[in-house]
Length: 219
DNA sequence: CCGAAAACCGACGTTACTTCA
DNA sequence: TTTGAAGTAACGTCGGTTTTC
Image 1: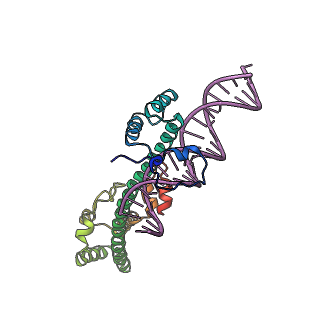
Image 2: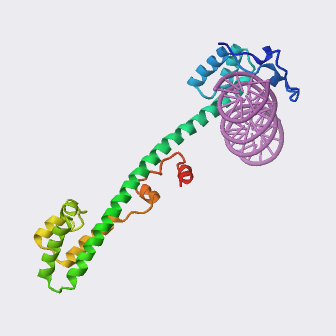
Image 3: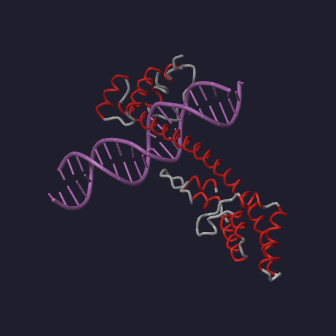
């Protein structure tokens, strides 16, 4: 259906508040005019003065009207872009937040394991006999059922001991000093700051198009 | 060549109005 | 029929760039 020109809507009373002729002439451009303007905008969002005059002549409009249409069209395009960017960033944020939540849970579980290991270490150090304490620790590992959980974890390769998993260390018969180092490693792994600092470590919010404002918005 | 004034242009915010649910 | 939200053409202002003198 064709759009109605405002000038043709005789039934409607027009306000006399505004005396400007342009505002009373034609409220909406015709479908054909819009179609041409849109196709022009698709090829170039800014018009050269000569093209503007030519297009205005083709459309039966004033060059000023064409210029204003392009200005408004650019503004509409920009706000659409902002809307799309917002949707994308929100999706990214939600995905990161969920990853963060699961890491927090992992952290909690690591802390629990640490506490148990510290308890074991405390009770073994009171004994004073290294050989005994080693076997007690081993027995306790088996009793607590931690062997599978912790033994499966590959530690960061910082030195000879931490490059091995706990199961291997136990096979070699580790002492309480080595065990403490191992616990320290676990503690390092379990340290998790805020979502923001965690994200920054991946440069997630260091994208070029002003993402800090979104971060501020969501934080 | 340099600098001030004028002209031009685009972005942005706003207004007045229409359309539609 | 009324009303509020959304869309749109046009405007005013401001700041940056180019042109003119």
